[in-house]
Length: 362
Ligand code: 5AD
Ligand code: SF4
Image (cartoon, rainbow, N blue to C red):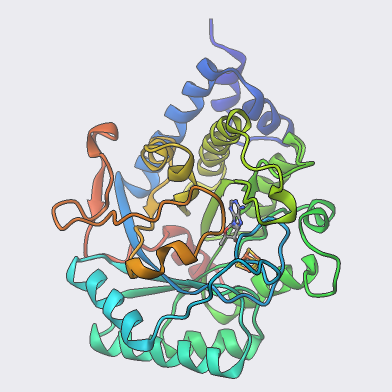
C-alpha cells in the first residue's frame, strides 16, 4: 500500500498543508522524503557538491540579534578584523586548492571604511585570480549604493537570511530598537535581486515560539521570492545571548537537527534548481551533519578558511567547530563514504541553474 507521505511526494505541487504533514511525519516516512529530494537534486543539478571557502572577515557587528553570540552587547567577544593581506591569502588558498568560489562573511558594518575595504578586497581577488574565483558576500543589510559598489567590484552572489519569514516571529528574535526591521530586510533582498546578484536567503530552525506552520510558510516565502540560493540551519543556543541563557538542550537540538533535514529536503522538492547549503551549524550538532544534509538534497558546503587564530572569535552559537578541517588530500572535509555517488565540484563556480533561468525570463 502506498503511504500517505508517498502520495504527497508524487504530487506535482506541494500545498502548505502537505508541507506541514511532511515536517511532522515519522522518521521512517521521512526516509521517503529524503530519497525523493536527493533524486530531484541529481536530476536538476547533478550529483556534484560545490565548495565555497568561507572567510569570516570580521566579528564586529552593529546589530544585536537576540540569538547571536557576536551581537553588539556581548562584551565577552574579543573583536577582530582580518587585514587585507590575510583575506587575500585565504582567498588564494581557496584558489590553489581549486575551490570554485569563496564566501566573505562578517558582522554588519555600514561604515565607509568597511565598505571601501571590502570593495578593494574584491577587486584584488578578482585581479589575482583572473576572475576565476567566484565571490559570494554575506555582509548584512546595506544601502543600495553599497550593494552596487560591491557588485561592480566583482562580487556576484549575496546571502542575507530573512531568519524568520513571519514578521511576528522576526520581532520576537530581534530587539525592538528601530535597527532590526523585518521590512527593511525584505527590501534589501529585493534590492540585491535588482542589482543582479544571485540572491540567497534562509531561516533558523527551532527558534523559540516557532511552529511547523511558520516553517511551512518559510518554504513558501522562499519559493514566492524566487530565490537562487538557500542556507538554513538549526538554532543553537549561545549562553551569552538573551535567547540562549539556559545553554543548549541536547534533546531539543536533535529534534531541530532532524527538522532541518526535513526543511532542506522539502526546499529541494519545492525549489528544484536552486543551490542549497549544508550549513556548518548542521556539523556543530552532528559530526556528519553536512553529509546528512547532502543526502537530503543540499549541494553546497562552505569549508572554513578563516585563519585559525581568529576562529574562536566568530562564535555565533555554542559548539561551532573551530578546528582546521581542510586537508590537501580532502579539501571538502566530507566523509565521501557516507554520500556514495556524490562528487566534489572542483574549479567551477557552481551557479544555481535557477539564476540563469531567472535572468533569461527578465
Ligand atoms: N544559532 C544558529 N544560527 C545562528 N546564526 C546566528 N546566531 C545563531 C545561533 N545562535 C545564523 C543566522 C545568521 C548566520 C550568520 O548565522 O542565521 O544569518
Ligand atoms: Fe550581527 Fe548577523 Fe549576529 Fe545579527 S546574526 S548580531 S547581524 S552577526
